[in-house]
View 1 (tube, one colour):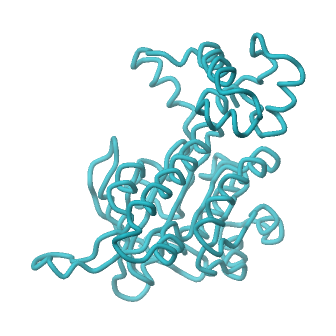
View 2 (tube, helix red, strand yellow):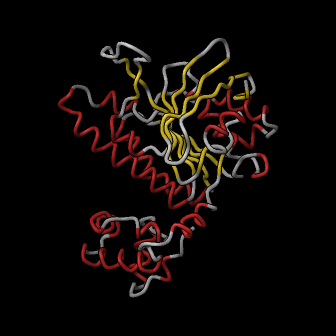
Length: 312
C-alpha cells in the first residue's frame, strides 16, 4: 500500500478528512487522479486539487527512473494459479497482479469456469499458487453459480463455507450499474483484503445498452473510462483483474477462424494479456495467448472437470 496521506505537505486536518471520506486514503490514489475528478470527489477547488496531486506525485517520486528500479518493483507482482500448470506456464506463471487479463471465446469455452476457479484459487496460500486473499466478482450475465464454487473449493482442499464467505459478489444489471460497482469496489477492496477483481462479462451490458453504429463512440468512451478504473485498482492495490469477453463472427474472413473479440481497439490496447479460449472434444479446452507485453504467443490444452480446471 502506498504512503498514507497524513504525510502530504500543506494539507490541513479538515481537507485530509474530506479526502479519506471520498476514498483517497493513500498517496497513489491521489497521484493517479486528475484535478477535475479530485475536485468533484472531495469538494476542493480545481487549482488546489492540482497542487495536491503535484505534491503527492513528488512525494512518490513519480518521475523517470532506471529500468533496474522498475525490475525491482516487478518483484512485488503476485500470481494466481489457474489450476492447470500448462495454462499457468502460458501466462508466465499464472494470472498476474497489476494487470488486466481478458479472456474471450464462444459460449462453453470455459471463460466463466476460469473466473470461478480464480475466485477460489486466489484464497490459496502463496506456496500453493494463491495470494491468501479474497475475490470481488461483478456478474453481468447471471452466470455465477455458488454450487460450482463449492465443488472447486473441495477440489483444491479448501473449506467451501470459508471460500464462499471470501467472495464478494454483485450483479450488474446495465453498463451504468457496472461502472458504479467498479467505483464502489475500492471501499470493499480496502475493507476486505481483495486480491482479484473479476468481471464476467465485461462487454455484455455495454453491448445491450448501446446498439447501432451511432452509439459506438459513446460506448467506447465509457468503456475506456471503465477499463482505466479497473487498471487503477490493479496498480494501487497490487491485485489481479480478470475479465471475460464475448466474440462475434466476421463474415468477411474467408480463411482461418472467423471469430473476433468485441470491444474494439480500446479493449485491445488496455488489456495487458489477451487469451482466446475455444472448446475442443469433451472436457478439453484450448487456450491461445494472443497478446502480452513480455510473453510469446502460444497455445495449450486444459480440461474442465467436476473439481475445476486441471491439466489435460
